[in-house]
Length: 142
Image 1 (cartoon, rainbow, N blue to C red):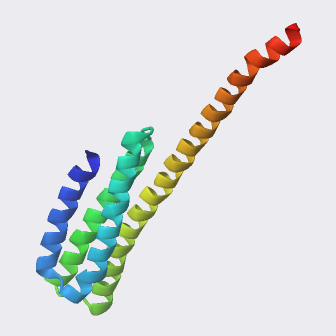
Image 2: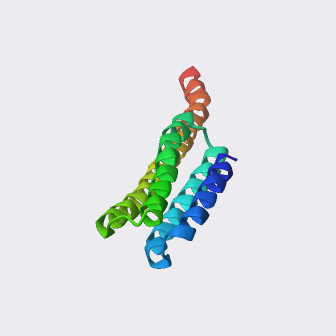
């Protein structure tokens, strides 16, 4: 599963970042990471049950690189004892990257659910038309 492989890389990056960055700074980042992970897994589960949209994972690959890069930059700001405003900006970027990933998976999940409902409704309408079709033919034959 794609989400598991991506998450393993992120979890390793988070652990590395935890070593350099104080816990109070990491809390909102970890929350955002957990929210993204939940959306990613939910999307993937629905994707496996419905239809795959490869573009989602292609778009996420760019997000993934941004997430891991931002975590590294955050670690670097603390390891290099950067100014407080640089540390804060790096922390905000890291959290925002996770929120952007969450938004991507949430949006695509909604698209899959909409598509699924549309397919179900189309199948229902088609079935209803097929059921009516023979009856109309018999009525016209009389």
